[in-house]
Amino acid sequence: MNYTPSREDYLVTIYLLQQTLPHVRSIDVAKMLDLSKPSVSQSLRLLQENGLVAFSEDHALLLTPQGTIQAQYIYDRYQTTVDFLTHILHVSSATACQD
Image 1 (cartoon, rainbow, N blue to C red):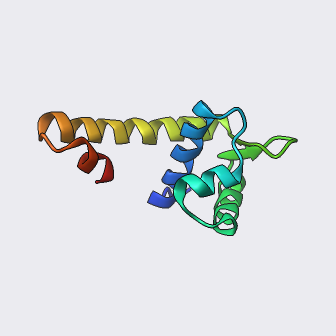
Image 2 (tube, rainbow, N blue to C red; image 1 turned 45 degrees about the vertical axis):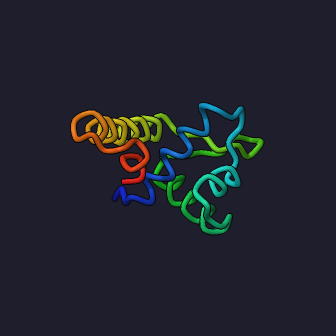
């Protein structure tokens, strides 16, 4: 599967939401990414077809084991980049997160 920045955003968003919400729904992803629900539904369907997300019986969104591995890797890469920008290059935290 080709991991575009958009797909990476979805995986990380689901990963972060799973750490704070008891059940993640597609509307939660849409709100966090500031996207329309139809757009999110289409992207989630692609992630599901590629074995990265699944839906529980009550329609909660779940990362599969492979999806979790990918989301953790992407998030760790992001955190490493932010740490480098803030601690080594002394970029402000807000700018580092945005970049």
